[in-house]
Image 1 (cartoon, helix red, strand yellow):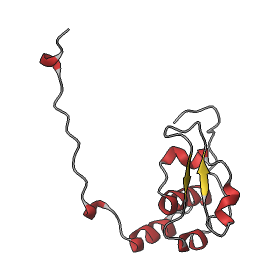
Image 2 (tube, one colour; image 1 turned 180 degrees about the horizontal axis):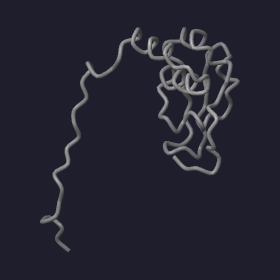
Image 3 (cartoon, one colour; image 1 turned 120 degrees about the horizontal axis):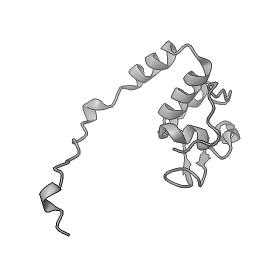
Image 4 (tube, helix red, strand yellow; image 1 turned 90 degrees about the vertical axis):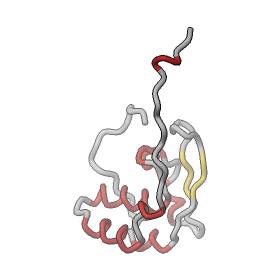
Length: 112
């Protein structure tokens, strides 16, 4: 079959370095979040560069407190198993990431 007549014209919008918030902006947003669970999630997203669903697919959160801070994402994630390190490392303590507090939502049994 020839699908050329219904082919879309999708082109991804190029990313601009100006779209990335500064460290100060990231820290200000973290300070403005009142809910401890969502504050922890935001800190993990910012520090480890995780995709939102990956916060709920961490193999062992104890890795946050190690010398390297390395954590591993589980195999059942969209992108599969991978190791991730904090950047910048100072956010691990600044965002109190060793005090793991998940938001009060049901995430068991849900996919990405």
